[in-house]
Length: 639
Image (cartoon, rainbow, N blue to C red):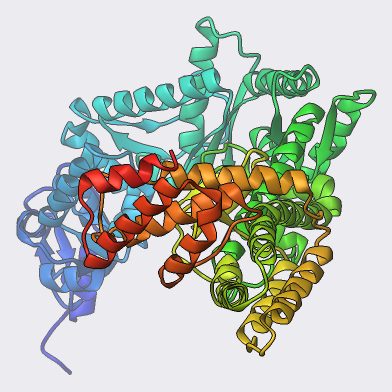
């Protein structure tokens, strides 16, 4: 048998069986004992409480209840009672299994108050993240008089309406800032009749429900302070809060409807030219879901109107459609003019212009670059009002230019070529048969086939461009014989016809019968003229043309300007030809080597004195120089 009277367990049971002081939980006595952690001893409660207070103020790491029991050497079953007695009791984690001591609690409070200066801090969410009991945290907030600077409360309507709200900590200045910015957005929404949407990032840390309550309160205050808004509502839409001023929006919708009707009325009264239905739909999306519904609404409004039409997705004044169609048609005409000019500038490399397609014509007939008419509307007007006749109009304009070209050509050919050839032909025919007539006829044949006719069509440098009286454009060339400008023509029928005549000229070979050769050339020319309906030459035409030629030749005789004609041979030949023409039919074509025989031909027609004087001057020319006085003497014979 053991010497001990009581076992450890017996002693523990005896101690615990003592009567409990009435103030056990508030005023522990020095003799109050509590079971030790190992269950085999007793510890003074005051020692445990002092150790707990020291631990609470100095320990920064969290402890479980078991770790605290071991650290204080006290039975875990009475640890809750010990913690309740401590004036500096630590805080609990959310699940109550861990203890948080004052150093960490102070850090959490500092973090909480720092955030509360910037955003509304939701207490429950803060406790969840920090893993601290909300009851303990709120106790610490009140215990440390944090509420002297910060507010702790919910965000609700002033009348208590609205859903249940969360508890937040915040500053007065933060609340004032939030209300001010919300008020500005609400004011703008009321004035402009539009919704305001706040995303989660714009809610100052408040949850959607609490922020909705705050918006409701601010909006309610503004509406009650003189606003004529019927009512306003803020709703929670997922993570967004939406404020909708219904009465203002309804009024704005009515205003937009009236604006639509005004636009239509302006079109009907020709105060506007057009407007886009798509733009109209975009201006009033709450009225028109899409362009199609807008068109239907427009058709109802336009019922009975004769001055407004719908083209594609445009409402257009009918008068504007007619005007635009006229402009587009003019553009097609101009496009034809430009194509003709390009062809005329290089007929051997540029194809004869024809309208290839209405699409290309549409591109060519765009309105000016600075036009405010949308390209889509231009396309619609073209396709509906112009396209059917576009190709025909283009080709008709080309045909018109071609016909004008042929008419101008016929006039020029008759005046510059046919009359001249007839004058030359009559002159040689009027000569007596013999060597002179034969040689001059042969010279004329060579001039006509190698120079006169080919020069009518060959490519030469364009000296200028001129607008003809009917508005068509013709290029001009310089005639090598007269120095006059003559038109350059490229009609559809002219190119192949002139090429054929040029080929005939190039293939010309002299025969022993010069007059038969001349007749062959005349026959080819007459066939060419007949192809283009060129009128025959009359005697009156020849008389007038001859006088014009002689007048022109006389006016060009300038005794003061020798130029390249230093010896005076050209001047002398011109005077002789003019004198012969004045006394004979037609107009001779001759060169300087014929001058001696031409003087003999001229002799019967002039006085002996003049003839002798011409002989003297001829000799001077042969010597290689005429004096200014001698030049003036020659000119005086024909002027």
